[in-house]
Length: 107
Image 1 (spheres, rainbow, N blue to C red):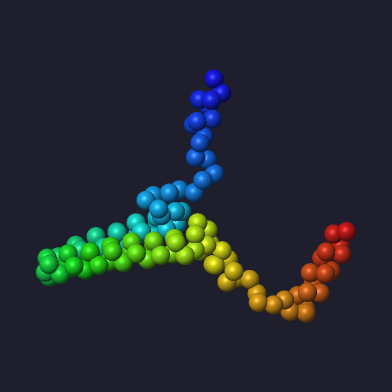
Image 2: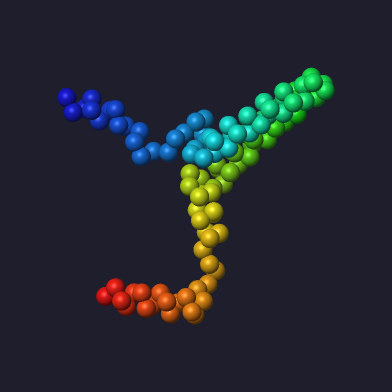
């Protein structure tokens, strides 16, 4: 009886995976495809062949970039990289004194 219950929750806690792309990289790929479609319809009135080439190039580039970032940074790599930008390289002495005062008050 309990075996059926646990089979439902088999994928809980795992990152979303779509043909090797994980988490936000799926979103980046979808945005690239949407941009390719918009470019196709915008350029189609000028020349159909050029619109096929431009849309195909944009779609291929979005696929390659999202796959490269997925392989390089992993599941949460881009989030970590963006979070590290907001961290200071060093703590100034004035800020360090404030931190020490706060930790001493909490004791």
